[in-house]
Image (tube, rainbow, N blue to C red):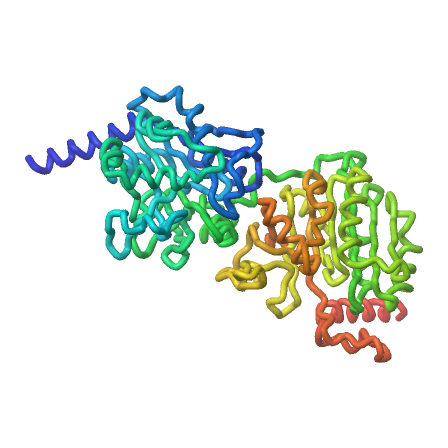
Length: 537
């Protein structure tokens, strides 16, 4: 009899979960890459989403620099009024720019019911913004998070509406402090039956918890696992200063990349040029930069020239700082100038610095109404003649082909950055560089070769100047600060980087000395010489 009662209770629980309606509500005033990532995860799991504030001016202050966010609550007051009497509707609020889902409504509602409270807030390990309130929080066990985080909460619609309308709040006042004071008031906590998700059953805040989580795979699916609490949270929030690591994890979550399926996200939102008439190909500016004395510049230009793309749809922009390469560049221009739609050369005698020349390339691309800007240093050899086409077809705002020094782990991207904004190695960096893992990866830093979509260019006119940072660092920081996602792809072999560390221009036959530092180019040149010899015979 007891067995049948348990089965009946389980079926009743399932019925209650199925009958409840879940609505995701988020605040977003701009459609950033992070927002699109959030919506993509919602769509994958068929979650119903209400986006509040799109197109409005954000008046909640700079939350990355300090307190703020009261504007969120005031927007929610207006949006949730229509649900103020609903007891059959569960409202879940989450941030959007740094959040992804890993499962759907059935999983969320099942976990919510097991937590046993009408309102559940996310929890974290930091008492913020007022640390003096820490002692007022209920005690928790060692594996649990004690303090409220306002980036995610859910509950009965009627209760949630009463909470957000409990008292007035200024737009620039802090939303987390607002909810914290409600939670710490025992009478209010009891009235609305508020509980914190201390074990990250539903909400996983990553700040301060990166050592507690890992991505796991089960067949064609990926999910986040909290090794401390043994939970599989459904809402993953990259709160605080962990945005770059969150983006790295998000490469895998939502089945973006799995061990059995590989890169599933690579197939999303792609284009095809195969059916496009040559006359309708998008206009591209290729901006070439030579800022060091390097070997094999002639071979570099040859690979640019041989890209499988109609040259009359290409505007070529060249900045060469090095007098050593001036004659090589002029020779290429003489041979190729008539092939391109236009060609602009900034020579060494013009004395233009690197950052300025890169900013000018952005401006020039805008003026010429190009669709894409391919920025490429002469150290990046595109051995694959279809590289430009492949990058365009992948259809991302900023996308780099993965290129590296052969046999080395020196590449054109970083998998992570340190607290001071410089290089750090992510746990998957080596696997990506040696192509053990092939995919499309969001990364915090790109250099040497990348494609930029035209819609970003107006915001990048001064991207290469940022205080004392080198131009490459300034560019990536500008994109990160704007909330833009930078991608690198290693789905195909695109080419390699030249090693110029030991290139000595004072030596006779200086490139011949590079046979060991640059074996790929040296081998190709050897094959070319053999072919020429055979042709003579």
